[in-house]
Image: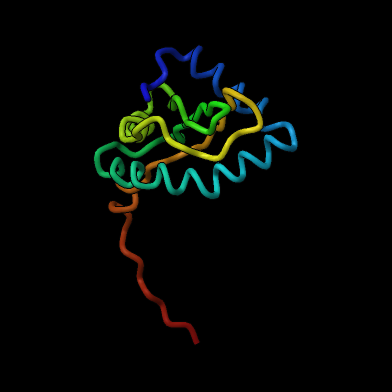
Amino acid sequence: MADATSKSEFDAALKQSNRDRETPSGKRYTRQFEDKVFLAVASKAMQTCLSRSRDTVEPAMLVFLVSADGKVTRVLSTPGIEYGKCVVSQLRLPISVPRPPRDNFAVALGIANHTHAQSKAPPGKPVRAR
């Protein structure tokens, strides 16, 4: 569950996720993970962290490492992005997911927090068109 201990460790996991996604079975699994698992698993953690974290300038990447038996064993986030670190801290591992094409399969997804910027935006003004 811990955040990446170093930038090089995170970068290696992110590169692995790109390689894992390149195969047809990897693409299918990544879509399945994104559509079903990510929304169910991370959406609550993301919601919890919206007000606790500053807005992101760039998205935080999360890299989920999945074992052959379908358990998320580790989640890494982009070093230095508070929102990603908060989301990872809210996840309780191991998380059961469908079995991946191979052991130690990596899935990377981007998340962003823009709630504070939206609250400072001027209110919309309705306009009537003829």
